[in-house]
Length: 256
Ligand code: AMP
Image (tube, rainbow, N blue to C red; front, top):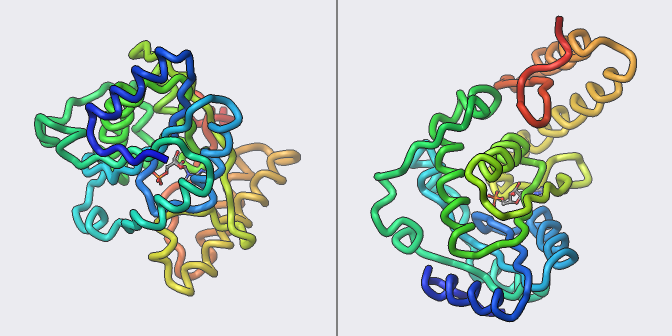
């Protein structure tokens, strides 16, 4: 496996692959890799000739500097994991390589309202930063296909939308959420959960399962009300949002 750290090296690699008629599958990550990330690598391996995984903790998508500082960074184990899983290139650039003109001059994208609900209001500027880094990485990596997790569903919908809107020739593939046996979705941030947080998280998963089942027989309105009531009734959990939305437009569905 090659470890590339500069934009130039990445561009040259992509050019060479294209010259040789090889397709590139791309998995963007922020590192601290786990089985969720590896499922994207597996999908990339099955669909493309060359697999590139980027590990870059993108400062422009964090709206809290303490969250950025606390984000886990595990380069050595990430490199080993990628190497053992048949990845061809690990792209590990510095902030200066990704944003040579300084990250503070971040362009503002019109996300056509897709960032107005769910994660959006709680994380101002987050999706703008995500789109900024993903488009920059697409330019460098020369990806034919890019693989994203459904765990971050709003992100996936926004990337699909922006790729269409900005005419990028990248095929976006969504991959199912990989979970712990308890139902907790795997995430690099899970190392920061307390014992109690881990236990409580299963309540969220069970609520989602119950909601999915109730949607088979109850109106969306009632099923959603029941799910919210269940969470409101659980001590120590404060609900940020729970919404039923159209998977493409992310607009609320099922009412009226
Ligand atoms: P991150 O490193 O958290 O930015 O995630 C990089 C990519 O891996 C994103 O497309 C995530 O949606 C995806 N991902 C993270 N966790 C999981 C998971 N548990 N299952 C599936 N995909 C995941």
